[in-house]
Image 1 (spheres, helix red, strand yellow):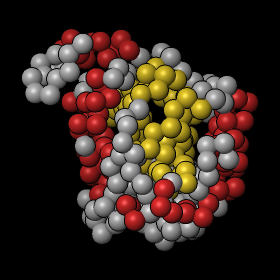
Image 2 (cartoon, helix red, strand yellow):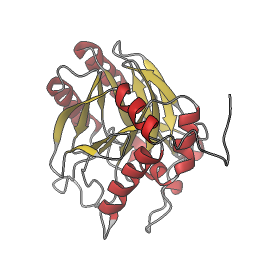
Image 3 (cartoon, one colour):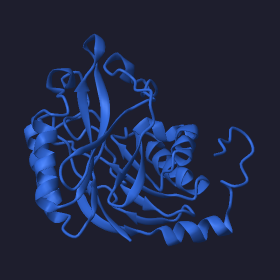
Image 4 (cartoon, one colour):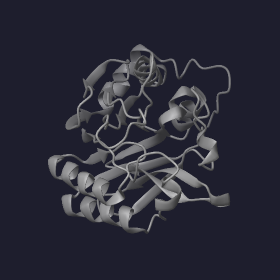
Length: 264
């Protein structure tokens, strides 16, 4: 059994303010093995992120690592790293309970949709990532990535036992429905526990419309076990591999795949 803290925090343009919120959330996550924070936890999305992006040994990740070590739990959070051509990488950084960086997944699918153009500011990654944290092999998925089932299947083929989806989901007509539907679909079609964490809305500090909350834990049969709704919050949830085994015995869809299967 692994205990996960879903850390749905509001994100400020100021990295120092966000680091303080991360520390406060980790203090509330007592008893968890892993804490998951949203995409863009470093700073709110926007052109200013080009100026505040940091390498993984910069003050923000270093501060998160210190807090992870102090509380004895692993952490996944979204940051921006300096990239090529004046752009940045949208990175999900994974730290173990000793504060060591175990993986840095650079978002592959950029959000050039719904009148947004993420590729103007962000360099796409190219390599999926599965990282072992808190006794689980975790496949990393960032926001728009969740619309691409082939990425989730690649993570399954690489041995993922849980999906961690981090997001800064945009608001708008039906957008919240898209989020819930897609997260549940990725869990159900792969019979996989899925922990999805988004930013809480933060109209006091930004009017950009990003962050709808709705952080969730979804079980391997697509049932929502926890949903934080809209307000900021930290909720502890539990996952176990026995539930996965039972789901896959009932619904062996991964064994029944025909197209695009990678056999050992």
